[in-house]
Length: 418
Image 1 (cartoon, rainbow, N blue to C red):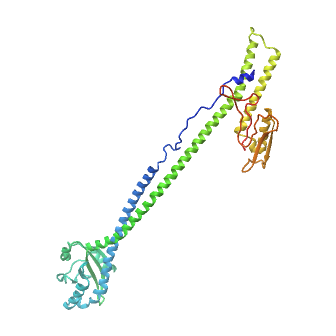
Image 2 (cartoon, rainbow, N blue to C red):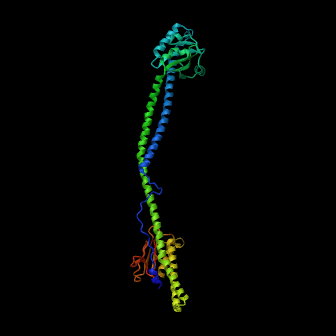
Image 3 (cartoon, one colour):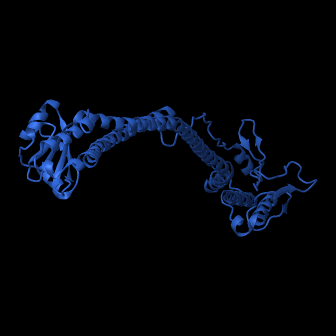
């Protein structure tokens, strides 16, 4: 009676699931074009900042180099051309000495770059200038000029054409004056000063930085061009990795869902149906005993019902224990695979299946590599039971309604996976 009730109970089947498209775990999928565009924009901004800063640094260095060239030219003119002609006669205002120095200055110092030369005493008197009207006049020396005389260093600055000693240079436009201390042949300290065109110095500055800055820009552009395909390749690899992670996550979710439905189906089709049948049978017997208008069951009937209920309860308990072993086999950690297989064989034998275990190279550790295990039935006994080889195996039968059913007494056979 309990078996017929169990066979008539509905079976639980997993719902059909439509194919789902895997999505990125982060939500929005990685777009190669979007990532590369972001990289290109970032590189362009970085290149612009680097180029601007480099231009400012290179331009400043070019300006310093151009002024240094002007100072070097003045030092060469002072030491190599003018100094030997700075005689005591020149200091005394001798016309002959002035003409000799003027010939050297006009012929060898003045050029398209240097447009004026002045020689000062420490008191501010001009002892020579290629502008004769300035010779013999006295003017107050500026702070920079006094510092150059005292420190013995070469100084340069933009000329103040509003000062009276510079009235003859106003026609040349912006000038840069370079001055340094020199000594006459008698040891007197003098100040040698040249006035150079600012436009020439700016031309030198532009020539210097224009030779460096294009190379820097070309290097940045080359780096940018090389990085774009590399960034595209990296973005493609990230996209593939993202798709792979999404696919693995979806497979894990699907496997978990499938396993939950399998466990629910096993519980419903096994212990739940057994216990339901026990409940219905015991309830029916209780109703007969409690209803005075119905014939009470005989002693043999009650014994039969109780024995059947006890058998079905034990079957449900065994199936629950088997399911627990399938979910988390305790013997794998304590007794190794041999002990776990032995328990499975014991369960199979309780279901009437003649089974034996063969192991090769198995100890207490879980099997790896070429270790094999086989659960098989004895030749000639219970041919309807299949041999259980490595991997999960089950025997199912279907009822006319298309629902899965198990023969009574062994609804769920043990299976192993090495």
